[in-house]
Length: 136
Image (cartoon, rainbow, N blue to C red):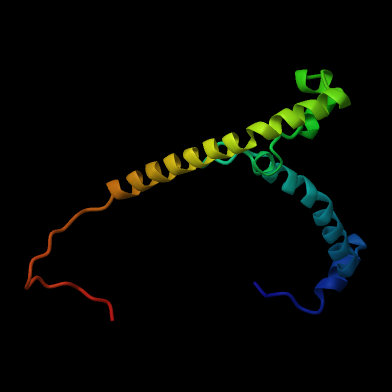
C-alpha cells in the first residue's frame, strides 16, 4: 500500500466534500474540547499507590464530579455556601494528617511492589573462577 501523496486531499474533497485542512482544524477543535474532560477524569481518579486523587491531595477536599451535579446526592443536596466554608476550614486542620496517611500508603505500596519483583529474582551464588557472560 502506498503512503500519503498529493492526490489524497483531492480525493477526500471529491468523495466527502471536505478539505484536508478543514478536517485537521475540526479534529484540533474537538481535541481541545475533550482535553478538559480527560484532565478532569485524570485529576479526580484515585491513584492505586496512595489511595487518593491528585485533586484531593492538592486542595484537601474531594471533588464533585459532573455526574453528581445532575443527580441529587447527599453531597449536593446538603450543600450550602456558609456550611461549605466552615467545612473547608475544618478540613484544613486535617490536611497534614491526610497527607501523612497517603505517604504511609505509598510506602506500603512500594514495599509490596518490591516484594513482588524480588520474588521473581533467582539468586545464583558465584564463586571465584566462575565464568560470567559480560556484555561489552
